[in-house]
Length: 540
Image 1 (cartoon, rainbow, N blue to C red):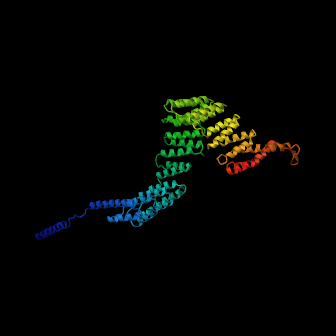
Image 2: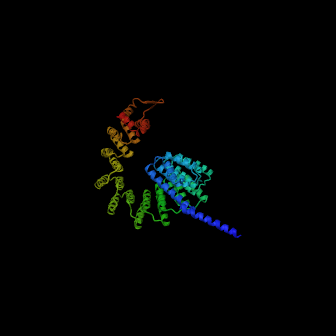
Image 3: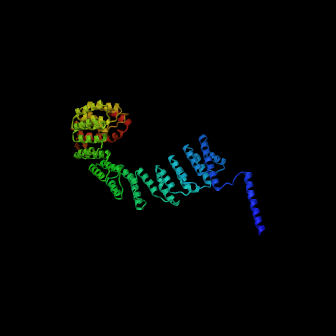
């Protein structure tokens, strides 16, 4: 027994001696697992740093630089290193090298590829309009030892929904994603709703929203409701009933509209000629504890002015001032418009003076409204004084200003002055309204100045001005009127045989026949300068 313990002790001491001898000879301790991991991380960082330096100096083939950088440190390329290479290639528009990088990740590397690499690359492909590559990458994700999730799906959906052609592929992507065990979540539906609103398919967006609510995904998303509401209010093919029904329904479900939502509803009501309903919405807005801003008040002012509720206009304007809101130029213009519609253009002029005192400079819209107000009551001379005032204050006259003045001159019988003013705005490069041009042409023709009308018409060639059908009718009627009268005077001598009956058409019949004969061709000609010039030459 004693000999056994002695032998055990001697063998133990010999191993200890051998271990110490090894340490004295090599001067190295065996690496612990912790230090080995630390060393591996350090090597990876050094390799990535070397890769970044090489990419900044020579990026002809970044994949080779990646492999060389890690081989120097006897390490394997990491997912972050591949992510850096892919982003660098995309940034330098070297998309042709990205497939080689992906092939190496798939066939050579053994790590489980993080999904964020594919999420970013799908987005990069989308930004570069490489839709097919984005779709192919999405379905290829499982080959990279990665389980795709809703993040990858949402990234692809976002790319497809921004592309006019890609959006039609979305249904197929959703069906195939189910085979990949990807469940469509609320975030995916949000992406689809935003896309549907962008392409104005708001009816389908509402259906998806109803599905989200009925399926119990979450509470009502206020941002989605606001987006759908604004899209509805901007639409042109929806009735007010549909918009207001959606508005009431989402409020019942707990939607709390903000100031912008109320503003969109008020704007929609005013646009559809429901000024008093807009006033009611403004009152509801205040009842909800939301203070209306200047934009809301201005919109309602426009609406009730259009409906002729001028007493409400004064009350609303005073209320806005009491609340401490400062009217802007649009608010003043709406109020001035209300005054002019009540034939109070002089009070509108006084309001312009108040605006200037308060530091709000009137614009051309302000003056145009007053001009129209004076001309509506036949005060052409007063309107011309306003025009001089505009010029003295440096307010630039626009095409609408000239249209208003020309219409006033024509109605006052000053056709020569109207014709001269029309030539002036054509020389300035301004485009008058078709109705204004027609008024001048008709006025010239009615006074027998057909040749002058033809000269004016010739000046419009090449100036993007297209006379309306009234101008062409006037030219036809008054150009052929002498021959028509001569023919009509011969009817008594040479009656026209109509089905065996002696019937003599009058001047109006001849005019109607001429206009009907040439009307369709002149409608087409009016929009084409070259053909229009030929017709003018024929008539001349």
